[in-house]
Amino acid sequence: MKIQNLFLFGALILLASCSQQQQARKPISHTSGTFIKESIERNKILIADEEDLIAEVIKQDSLKSYIASTKGYWYKYETKIEEVSPSPKRGDIAFFDYEIKDLKNRIIYNMSETKPQVYYVDKENIMMGLRDGIKLMKKGETVTFLFPSHMAYGYHGDDKKIGTNEPLICTVSLKDIKLDTQAKN
Image (tube, rainbow, N blue to C red; front, side, top):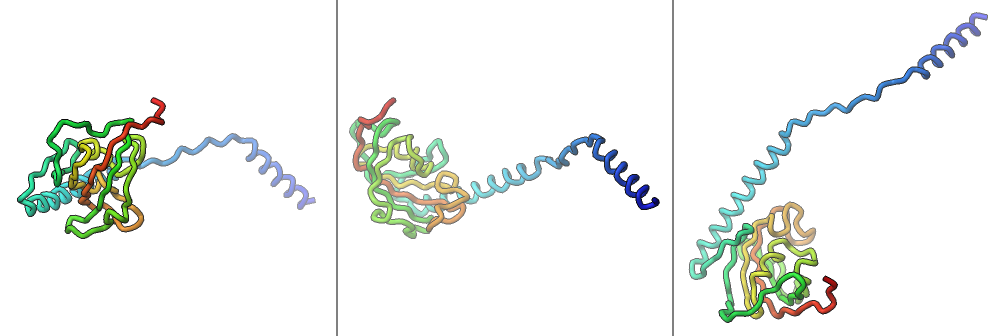
């Protein structure tokens, strides 16, 4: 009889505990913004260091005049077209060749590796700096861009030859500009 009473008592406790409503526990949050603040500071230091490296490249290339873009990169004309002619704009197709070097002027990708590019302006995902820089060019121009890593491949790199946070030198030759006749505006 004692075993039956013990069993009955245990069943009652179990039943009683199941019928009580438990309050959902709130997650413990320790968000203080420290991680974000530290990340911002690291990025500011990274950008300043890259800008110093780019300034050194510009200083060593004293025969050319570099232009600072409003987007945070620098460029110089290798071949400049003085006559009035259009630049690529959204809805155009830009045909260009380019090569990529590191800041020590070592080739990462030559023009044959990057193959001639066909770019639907502002409608395709390409390197952020090139996306903006191509719109500054005219047909027949060759421009060398100095991109800090955040305008190039950023933290991720390109998963091949371009590493993490690598500033780049890109020399671009704009071969042609055509209107996208297939576009549905």
